[in-house]
Every structure is written in structure tokens, then in C-alpha cells.
Length: 342
Length: 297
Image (cartoon, each protein chain N blue to C red):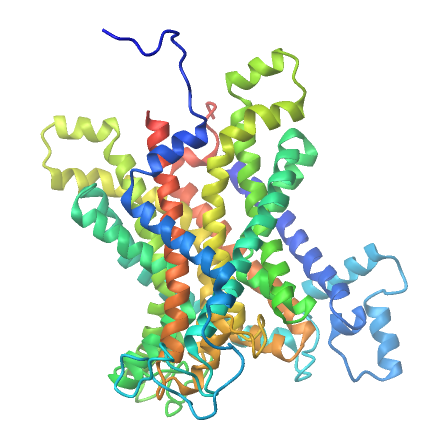
């Protein structure tokens, strides 16, 4: 496990270096001066400019500029937003939890729906049920997410009036932001209307989370189906049935556990996809998350915000990636890579 | 007993032809294939066939519902939008923008990706390991996020969207070509032609490429459905095709304000995108299914 951790750690450091290098070089590609794009100080006086040039080491060569940039990032200084002149790292700290909350809920929904359906399809392999589930999943990953979101708003918010169409929580509730994750904040607050607020927040998150969950759920269906088919084909399943276990016992005691492990590995890969979908959905549902903020920064040509948003979002995705790798390795001893008699 | 064949000469169909013969026997895949061909024809000839101009509006024909509706007009089969522009013509022109451009995008990134991928498969050691890690990093960034960043650098517009999507798709092609070439070069038939004295490029061209075409085509259909969705999403967000252009995503965004009064301006472009992506995916499924069957033989 130690070797595995060290190897992941080196991959992590390498990736972080590459990502920062990418976001650093993006500043030179954006229109305008690199130092302004880096710091976001568009109204800087000449004196401030001299200070900024000193801070970002622009008189030295590109390598030292990059080191200075890294230093700024490690200190948590991502510059100022060009549009609002507010500190970007505070903005991101305020916005990122909303996105994390939304994408985690969506991931949960996708897994709860997708994985059982995939297992059912695998058990009924090559029967009408299997074909039906497969065709529905094909529709699910073909549908453009913005269209699906609009249809969901029209049907469930406007025509039926079941769910609110925009925002994170009704403005009537005053919830103090401690962690930024709405549900935890509500449960921690001592407001007398705690449970009403909780219900309201759940109603707000339900529709966007379901819209985001559709595409990943269909991919989970396919993953679960393939891994279950593979597992059911193995010799230990045949041994179990030769031992006289009923089909139900085989599925619940042996097959599901082994099939799940293979799926966990792919969750990290799916997460990148899910976050992209979440970005678009945030725009449609006016969700106060980092995706909507990033797209608005593009409309406003806020290059500092775009560059920092890219860095933060891709780091977030990569961290989830590494975390699922660890969970996978912790659950599956075969994946730890010490097969040669350790 | 008559023997037509005097000389016992066996003809082995190429891997691609074997794939086609399996593919042909899957009805669903053939339906997808014909829809795909229909879209290609529409993308090429759509501007000639369209009954009205996609950008000029008829001011006395505003927000006309589709023809099957009681207020509909049969000369505007799918209704009109808030400027009196014919939806059918807009969708037909949109085919060549959304679908046609995504097809071109895939071809460009396929060619570049396959060249880089096969060259990189020939290298080994530090260079190859660096490229591997680099690709992993690029592939871990969501494709749409990357496309958005590239559009932010280049500025909005349909041309820049195309380049952005090309750049986003290239790493996927490099990745799959690299793996396919590496896997094939370990096989005995490649060793045989290496023992015959063939150089690396000759092996690549005559031995390996015919055997990996099908896998690359499978990836190309995946890339095409991603490209359609990316172009449409960028158009929807206002970062892709600009206002008068009848790109499907942009048309959909245009109908957004009148969603409740004139729902067809939102339903129809969405259905068009769905149709294009589903038919592409059906072809892709058919190819993957045929690949699996061919391997099982």
C-alpha cells in the first residue's frame, strides 16, 4: 500500500505541475498583457504595477515567473476578478461547495439508479428486459443536457408545479454559511424552521440533480452490465452453483460484491463527465455554483477568473480521481500492484 | 458433381469487410446507418432543398405553430419563430452546421490523432512515458471545459468552436491509436513482416493499419456524438455560432424566451440534436457489437 501511495503521490504532483503550467501559459494566450491577466488588476496605478511586476518576477525569465506564480497559488492568491475586482479565491471558496454538493447528489442518484438496472440487465442477458434497459440507456446518453433541463423545468416546475425551477434554497430561510454545503449548514443551524428549510433545499436540488444524473446513470448501467456479465461467467460462480447455492444467494453473496469493485474504479473517470454536465445545468437552473460563475466570466471576458476556474475545477476532478483510486485499492488487494510476491 | 472452383483458392476478406458483413446483419445498426447517411445527404444538400431562407423573416407570419396544429400553415411545415423565420429551413441549414461541421471536426482530429498516435507508439522510454502522463492529464479535464477555455482564448464564433472541438478530440484519438498499435505490434504477424525486413513505417501502413481501422472507426462514432453535443452546447451557451446562424444549439437558445408561448422553437432543435446523436450512437453500437462478434469467432 505504501508503494501504491507513493506512486499516486508522484502522479498527483506531476499532474498538479502540468495543470498549473497549463493555467500559467493560458495567461499569455489570452488577449492583453500577461501580468494583468495573472493578477486581474485592470485599474492598477503605475506604482501598483511596479509592485505586481516585482511580485510576479516579470523581469526574470519565464521559469522564475512560473515559480513566482506557483508561490502565489500555494499562498491561496489567485488574483482579482477583472469584472468585480473581488478576490477570486474567496469567491471560489464560496461557490465550490454548491457545485460539490450538486455533483455528489447527482452521482449518488446516478449510482442508485444505474447500478441496479445494470445488474438486472446482466442477469436477464439477451432477453427483452436487457434490450429495453439498453435502449433506454442509449437514449439517456444521447440527449443534450440543456434540452433535458429545459423540458424538466417546463414539465415539473411550470406545468405541474412540483419543484422550484431555480436557485439553491428559498430566500425566506436564513441559513448561515459555515461549511458552504447547504444540507450540513441547515442541520447545524439552530433555526426553528430547520426541517422546513431542509425540505425546501431538497426540493431545489432534486430536479437539477436528476437532470445531471441521467447521462452518468446510463454509463453506470453499461458498466454494471458488462462487469456483472463477466463475473457471472467466472469459475467461482460456477463453483458456488455446483455447491448448491440458490441463484439469489449467488447473486447477493458473491456476484454483486465482485461486480461492484470493478464499477468503483470507473467512478473517478465518470466524474469529469459529470462535472461538465453540472456546469451547463447550473446555468439553466441558476444554481450558485462554480460552473455558472465560470461561464459568466467568459461572457465578461474575465480572464483571471477563467484561468483560476480552470485550475480549481480540474484540480477538484483530479483529486476525486485519486480518491476513487485509493478506495478501489483499499477494497481490491489485486489492484495495489504488488503482485510479484510482496 | 460439378466443381465450379478448380483451383482451391481461398479468399480472406479484409478485417474491415468481415466487420461489414456482421454489421449488415444487425437491423438496428442498419437503421442507424441509414439515418446517418440521410443526415449526411441533408448536410450537403440541405441549403438547396430548404423551402425558405433561414435568416430572412416573414413579418406577417410570426410564431406560426407547426402545420398539424389548427393554426398552422402547410407552407411553413414546422412553424416559424418570433421573427417569422421558417423552422424547417433553419433546421435544414442547421444540419450542415451542427452535424456537417461535427463530421468534418471528427475527420480532422482523426487524421491528426492517428498520425501522432502511431508515431508515438513507435517511440519508447522517457518520451513515451511523458506523453502518456500528459495525455492522462488532458483526458482528465472535462472536454467541454477544455473547449470553453479554448473558445475563451480564441473568442466566440463558429470557426473557433470547430478548432476548439478538434483540439479536444485529438487526445482521445492519440490514446486509442497508441494502444491499438502497441497491442498489434506484439502479435506474430507483425513479427513475421519485421523478419522479412520491413521498416517500421511499412509495417505500420501495410500490416497494422488494416487491422485497427475498425477500432478507430468505433472511436470516431463516439467522437462524433461528443462533437455534436459539444458544438450544440457551445452554441446554446452563446459561445459558439453567433446570432443569425441556424446552428441547432443556438436556435434552441434563441427560442428560450418564448418557451412557454411557442414550445416548438425549443422542442424541434432539441429533437434534431437527439436524432443526430442517437443515429451516430446506433452506428457506433453496431460497430462495437460487430467487433465483439468478430473477436469471438
